[in-house]
Structure formats: structure tokens, C-alpha cells
Amino acid sequence: MLAPLTRRTLVAAAALGLALAAPATSATAATSKAAAPAPITVNLTVKGSSGVLFSGDIKTTGHDVTTATGGTHKCDGTNNKANPTPGATPTAALDDASKKKGFTWDGTWYASFDDYFVNRIAKDTGNDEYYWNIAVNGTSTSVGGCQYKLKQGDKVAFTWTAL
Image (cartoon, rainbow, N blue to C red; front, side, top):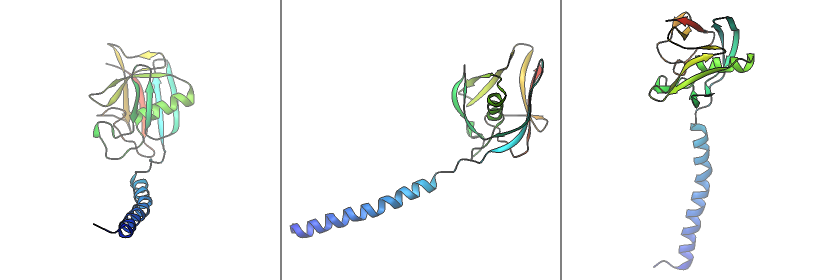
């Protein structure tokens, strides 16, 4: 059995060791978190049945998006494991433009795709004849608007399109 003084010394040394290690662990945890990506500027065009709703540069980054029918979900390019790091996306850019310009949009959330399907922008709602096409640099995206990670200067278009 250890003498009381030895026991107290060991307990004090262990407590001091834990106290010294705690700030280092916290600092390590804080620095290991990935920094949020910086906003980028893309050129966005939103063209509905009655003409252009938005056309111009928009500063955007990936962020949580909320729609009336879809709820709130992340929309940062990492959706459905499409990219390893977060960034700006077409749907996040649409969301930012809608707030800036004052038009509404809605999308249905599909958990199996980890993405929204944009079904309405302003008064144009998808149906058996039309849908909202998403294109980047003139090419329709092959993944959803929360999975596609944009680059600085990309040209993004949401276009009311006949089936």
C-alpha cells in the first residue's frame, strides 16, 4: 500500500498532466475541423416561362437550404458523397439569388439522392410538359444541384425546359 503522501503526489501529478493535456487536445480538435469554404462568384441565369427572373453574378457558397416541401438540408457539394470537400452548388446559388432578388422557389427533398429536385421557381411549377433544367457552362448537370460543386466563374443556368 502506498503512503498517503505518495498517493497524493501521484494524484496531483496525474491531475496536472490531464490539465496540461486538455488545452492541447482542444486546440488540436479546433484545428482539425475543416474551415468553411470561401464564397465564390458565379454567373447565374434563371429563365422561366415569362422571361429572365435573374441574370448576373452571385456570390455563393454551399450552405443549408430550406424549401417549403423539402425542409432544411445541407447543399454543399458533399451530398451523396459526390465530392470530398464542401463548396458552392447550383441550388445554393439559386437560393442566394432568390433571397437577393425576392423570388420564391421550391424543391422536393429525396433522401435516396441526398438532394432536392427543383420543382418550382416563381410561378413555374414542373409538370408533364416542363421541368427546371440545371446547366453549368452550357452542359446539363449529371448529378443534382446540391451534389455539383461549382468553381469560381462558372456559368449556371436554371431554365424552364420542355420535356
